[in-house]
Image (tube, rainbow, N blue to C red):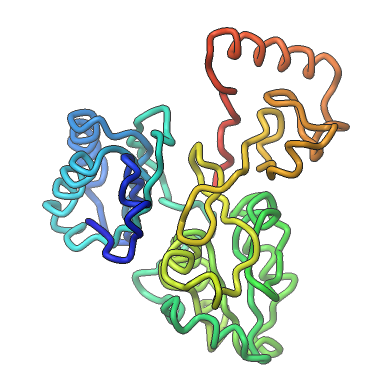
Length: 315
């Protein structure tokens, strides 16, 4: 699925990263796993796909030809026909493994009875997002986690300070009121968390609930930087760590010790040591753990490899 808006330099990058999801009734989801695993393996595609009775979610990466073959396989499954996919490009494979996992939820909120197929907020296209969030009556909520918000968010957005999406319902209960907050706008990386967060608010009686269609990634792809209300970079759940306007890879790396994204400026900080600690966690890690991390980093460097990184936190 070639993106006509992508720049020629972006298209020259050999690896296509495809982020996708769909909420759909999928009672036979377990039976789809082996076929998807085979399609990914046959086309040398890496990344993760999650299958559940409520649908599919995931991000995979590989060659243009390989991604097209996998998307053809997915679109041949009736429930996934016309699957919406957001693409970007990068120079190197951003994933190390290939996984198709069976889950209870394709994005974990942990609240029973929330079904985006039944009720969801109003989608707002990226081109119309700036106008919406400029409305003084709108409260703008970033539904992502603290380590994501730390490196970038929309101008004027509220940070719920959650460590996982499972904490978001509690934030809503304590900080949002349908009587006081007549207009609520929410956003996340690719849109999937907002499917559930807006469904949650609608269930709780909030009347005007909006969310950014396609998420931050679609906004960064669509809206020119000169017109953008986005500040900073966007955390992504792969080895690129973050992207900026134009969905171009930016300069963050992942701290091996705490999983926090580290900016280029903080990589020059005295408390940053690749593979060992960063300014965020330097005072939280024991000397013994620092020693073990340093030994592991030295082993990787001796083998000519980059840091193994940190297992990415659950969204």
